[in-house]
Image (cartoon, rainbow, N blue to C red; front, top):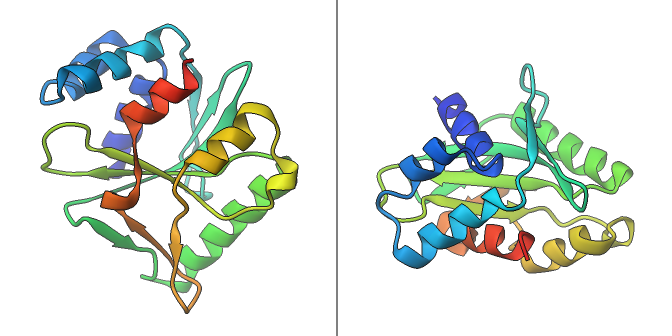
Length: 170
């Protein structure tokens, strides 16, 4: 099911007019205006084959980031369903730190009006991040880590995708 949302997010970040029109039908005018700004500075977005901890890779001349897409009807996602999810999250974090990339978790809340996407990042060594990636890292909310080391995404604590688009298209 989250493949549907991978395609949706891919279309948004590529500035696809049909996708933008569809996802903004219940958005406020300000949210809609922010979403459509991505058409001025779109990304090349590649979907990953298989689940290696990265669903999408968004690439542009000034900022690039791998994205793991999650979706739920619940406002909170606990990534503690299995040890494999924990290991996948840690691999994602380590790979991004080594490459100097900004890891993004995109959380799509189902059955909500308005902007249904929220973004998070992981706590990483920011010494490896530069320019716009470092500034985005400082702005994005960090995924909460439980005492057992599992990540928790609280939709209400995330950055709305329209706000992120507004920031990265300046």
